[in-house]
Length: 324
Ligand SMILES: C[S@@+](CC[C@H](N)C(=O)[O-])C[C@H]1O[C@@H](n2cnc3c(N)ncnc32)[C@H](O)[C@@H]1O
Picture 1 (tube, protein in one colour):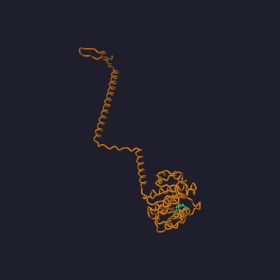
Picture 2: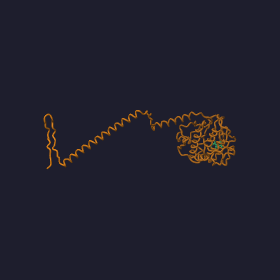
Picture 3: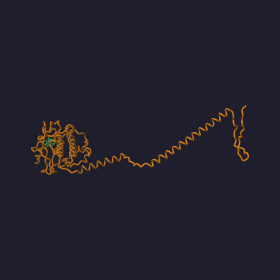
């Protein structure tokens, strides 16, 4: 027979003591097992609650420790993060400074481009000349001391074509719709032409040198076109000293941008041979006469001539160096 102990199930007052009601305890084996299970469940809960509390305290202590350490460390300066806008502003400012520097640069010498041949050129020749003039401007921009540049008779198709060039409106160049003879004193002006009897020795800073703005490829049989024009005006002419410094197997009539480039190189080196060597492509069969220094830049220059002389320039062509 199994033993049972009677335990009060409601609160009773015994003297001064309140006796809590207790259920009757099952002292059987099953009951003991049940109680043991109940106890171990409570202990498990207590155990994990305790663990949780410990972890919480550890975390709190670590946090405090870290904050204390950080407070001891010297404060690092905050590096401001540059935004894209700031970078753009910087680039804009640099461009503006460069442009102002170029615009305020003093000039020495003067080159006039006589653009009075508009009606003699085909549309593709107009485009080619426009491209050559972009190269001329770029060559001048590279000079430590640039030359003064001017376009005269600037009023026809060529003017329209040049205006398509990106940045053209900011070019540092004098543009006159009139003929050059109406703008510059003829006694101080020299027409450069391959047919001249006079060989150009130097570029004088008080003179204006005129380059004929024409791409004709002998289509009009325009041999002597500029020489005749200069003769009519009774002005001085000169040819570049090509034969003095170069052995040339082909014609000595150069393109507008080659003439400009030779002049620009001459101004920066004061050497005709060096100037010609870098400006006249090998394709023309030219090479510096013996004893004269040779340049290594031929290949690039040849390519450049191909671009300007033989190919039509695309509308609104953008030659990076020519951009403002
Ligand atoms: C393609 S050429 C024009 C050729 C045109 N048949 C002429 O009568 O001038 C372009 C310009 O470059 C200049 N030029 C070309 N070769 C030259 C040279 N050897 N000496 C001086 N100027 C030259 C001239 O001003 C010329 O008008």
